[in-house]
Image (cartoon, rainbow, N blue to C red):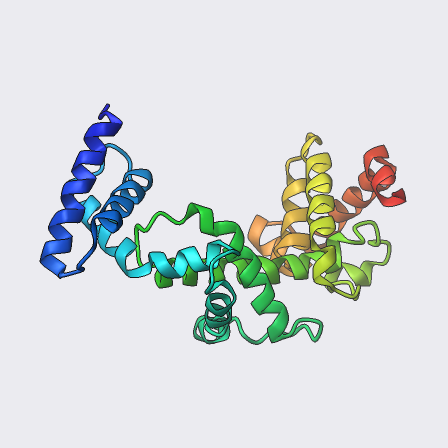
Length: 253
């Protein structure tokens, strides 16, 4: 394994070479800062080409990343305003800007994306341009958010499966972002309860129905069961969840 001092020396060499080659005109203190950052960002096994690429991306993007990450930075709020302004164009391009849920608007999506980026920032390693990486964070976070919002309408009231007609349509519970964490935990608890059952189809059917938002007909096609069989298994889920003390405790809180 390469010693940290050896890695630092390699990083210093790469920074010096790029500074001269690209005419960055770094001072001695800046070269040292670049070298220290690069040594933290790359593993000891990094090749010369990988070191060079990370150093290039770091030079191009580190000021923006630092402004976003540190509230004390003089450009912190300006950096976030500029970044948030890019969220909707990214979502439009990905086909995620329009939803069929009136409870979700553009501001909701922008705030979800902002929160996701703030959580992910410490993991950014300059393996790509920040714009490319943050675009992926936006798209993945909104995809997850929209999926959770659909699941919320079902998972938030998992025991309301009494009427057959309601198996085939999402519940009409109002959706609010602040309830998502509660719904996710409840969905996880329900799935854990169902996974304890000998019939593995129960947990799968619950996930397809509540999380993936599939209708009974679609579930039946996917797992090769008739609609009556799917309904019967969903009914068994209802009975198990109704009588499980963990679910009862959760719902009574």
